[in-house]
Length: 196
Image (cartoon, rainbow, N blue to C red; front, side, top):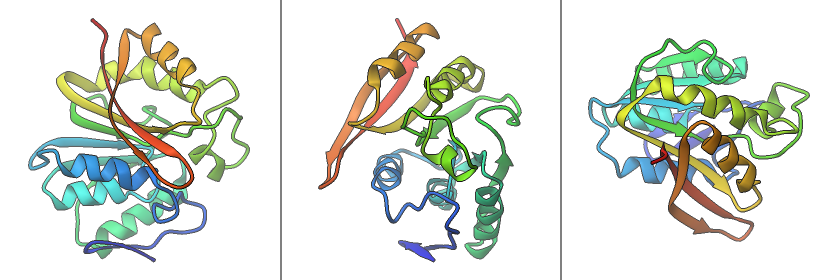
């Protein structure tokens, strides 16, 4: 069990745990400062769904997705536990998400360049050539409008040259909007926008 403010989540071992890692909380703190009431928010690769649940509690209309069916199952249970309504979709990136435009898209991506061998590893590994990021940036444009805020958290061990290269190939740019150092690593939040 994991408690965040007045949210209580049951998180199985097969799912990325927000209590043990810094990135989810950092992105959540940033998103919590945005106006969320009645806004359409997509948490892409939601894992525990903490960001999705917290945004729903603040009045956002939330869609949360994950490739891991166990994450989807437990987020559905945690919605009921916390008396919150959101749409939960089992999807590999955008594969099963109906096309619509969101106001906010939150992304805590897999960082490491290796091919995932198990469902659990999809939370960590983006493919040996960064295929996750290539597919992400190819599809994003279908889910945004002119004022969509796309926010992605990464850390200082990421291959940012590769990530920004995939973004640029799809006419997108990354702008750093926040950073925070902890004892183990430095995390950054980037805003993804259309390149000029």
